[in-house]
Each structure stands twice: as C-alpha cells, then as structure tokens.
Length: 506
Image (tube, rainbow, N blue to C red; front, top):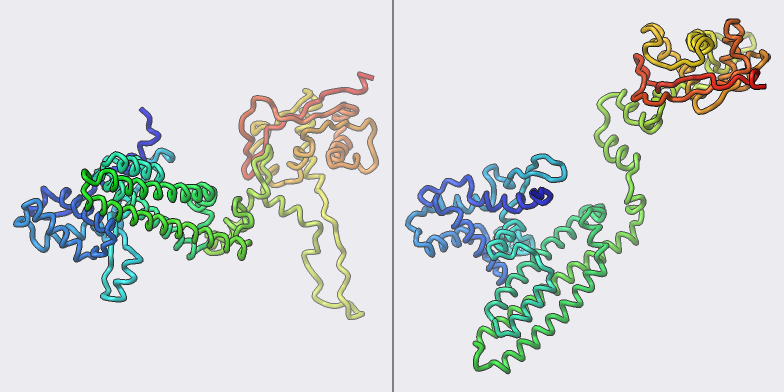
C-alpha cells in the first residue's frame, strides 16, 4: 500500500466525518448530517448569486426550510434548530473544530483544525455599518464537501473548466454548462478569498512574502499572466458560441435558459476580472516592498544566528540562566571536530597576560601609582611534562602509545581535564611528523611547543634519550569509534607512533 497520500486523504475526509458530530438535536438526531449538508449547500448557491442573506438568523431560516422540504418540520424546535446552526458555526468549545490525522512526513499523529463557515469580511463591513450583522461564507473545507458531493474532487485548472463549458454550449447542453459555470464561479471566488487573505497578511507583516505561498506565487507570475490571457480568449469564444447557438438552434433551445446561461457567463467573467485585479494588486504591493524596503530582503533566503536566534528568540524571550549563553554559542566555536574543544579554553586563550592579585592601595613618595609589571602568560611545563611522561615512557619502550581511558588512573584523568595546555599538545602533534632533535638545544627544544615538551622531558629523564633522531607521528587509530571521555573532557583516540629512525637509515 502507498501511504504517501494517506494523511491528505484523512484531512480531506475529517470535516465530512465530523459534520453534525457532538450535536444533541432531540428528535432531529437521526437526520442531523443531512440537515447540516443541506444548509451548506443552500449557502453555496446564495454565494453563487452574490446574495448576502447569510447571517446567523438567515442560516436558522435555511435550516427550517430544509426541515420543511424533508417533511420533518414537526420534529424540530427553535432550540434544536439554533443548536444545529451553532454547531456548524463553532465547535463545542467555541473555536475551531479539531480532528486527528496521520502526518506522513513526521510519521506521527497530528491535530487538524478547520471550520465550516468563515466571516465574509467585505459583506460584513457593510452590514455592520447598517445593522451590526455578521455575514458568513463557506470555508475552504465546506467548499470541499460541496465539490465532493458533486464528484469533482480533482481540481481542474480554470482554463480546462472553461473549455468544458464551451464544449457543452457547442453541443447544446445548456443545463450542464450552467452547472459548470456555477462551479467555476464558486472556485474562482474561493481563489479570490485566498488571495485576499494573503494580501491582508502581507499588509500586516511584509515578511509573509517569504512564506512558501508567497514564494510560489512570485515564481508563477508569468504563468498567472498567461492564464488570464487564456481566460479572456475562452470567454470570447464562449460568448460567440452562445450567439451561434441562439441563432442556429432557436427552435430547439429554450431562450430563457440560454439568457440565464449568458448572464452567468458574464458574471463569471466579472469574477475572473476581480481575481485578476486582486492578484495584480498583490504583485504591485510586493514590488513596492522590494523597491522601498530592500532591507527586508537582505539575506532572506538563508538562516543566520543574529536574526533568527539572537533577535527573534534570545532578545525577546531571554535565557533561563547565565550558563545557557555558553551552551548557546559553544557550537559557533566548537563545531563537530575530531577534538571537542571546550569553550572555556577558547575564552582562556584570550588572556594574554595577567596582573598581580594584590594591587597597592597607597601611592609612592612621588605621588604616582607604582608601575605594575606585565607578566606574559606562559605554560607551566612542570605540570605538563608530569602528565606526558607516561606517554613518552610507553613510546620509548614499545614504539607507540594509544590514548585511552584505561591508560590513566581516575586521578590522572582529572588532572588532564584540568590542564588544557597538556591536551593542546595532542592537537599540535596531529597530522604532523615531529623529528626529535639529535642534540639538546638551548632553551629546551625548538621553536614550537611540541619540541619544547620533548626537550623538557629528555632533560629530566635520561631514559628517553633513545628517542633522539626518531620521527614521531600522531594519528587516530583506525576502527576506533567515538571519543575518549575523561571527567570534564572529551578527546579523540589518538595514537602516537615511532615511524622512522633516521640514524639507522643513514
């Protein structure tokens, strides 16, 4: 079975399964789904006719009309009918309806929210000025139910639907053409509603232009213009077909039906023109934003720390504690590497020197501050060589040494973790060949710290003299997974090996 579209099927059917659910309508209970669908369908045709009699009171009257049509008006009561309408407008908690569905992408159950009715903002704006009444219209989900009941689940392109209408007219199928025109008007009005919602969102927050919907619209600009051109041609052809049908089949076709169809086609043209106007106004608004506010689009396609983390998260919401700051930015300094470098050590490296712990409180005889001597920061070689001595002793005896937790006692592990200078030397030796100097140099070794370490060790431990002239290489042992963990420290499993004896080879 192909599960890739199961979630979308589930979301499409949830509003149908939930239609009338949770309502307690007394004797009308067995008919609640049928009555609810009839109300939706009546509102659908009112919208086709641009009839604004769609207030809550009007919906109650539509429900009573359905009861009379079905011959069950005597089973209803004012309370049950009003409860039915309330159950279509709002869920039991007064908000959106909710249902579960399986999300194919996240592979988990997700909550879907939907409504059967939405506020018709344009009509409501006028009615509120006149009598304070809210006008409702079908939501996208309710429209989907209507289309499903018409067995037109697949949404064809508008141009294809226009071709179908033209075909019906050519063959004299006026009734079928009328149905298709009505469905087309409804579909275009749905598109107008979507475009208006996006336009309003864009006015409230220009960043909506970066949403998936806004990006797709901008990429389809040329396609949309082409679609409008095609629609104008289709409407011209439809009007010519209607005129030809009226002349050639005047004895067969009902003139009144043909006149009504012509009026509906003209209404469809006006609705398409309205859609074109809304779409073009959106593109005009987007163009003005790009010209007058270019800073909104700088770096819009990428993710950056300052905007998305610092300005949109940390500054408005703050951090739970001071230590969280280190955790937040440690990844900027310590990405995934062979060696996990603690951020505290990176900050410690910024201290190039230090001042005496106790500063003089009094001035000297001349009335000036006593000059404070600057002491450059250095390495405590005594502590470093004490940690490295077992490494080089093993190396001199067996030709190699592999860093592991078992190679050191718990006390030594704590000492390694507390001495970043000693750990740094593993990094400096990695991917480099170090030749141990033949003779002891002045100042205990060469220019780099690795040679200085070897010089300090060999000066104090004559048993390491056998390493002179030999070449040392540090690698990560093949086949080792993960890193070595000491308390407070994580480090890669390095292996240091004697790879060449230059004295013998000479």
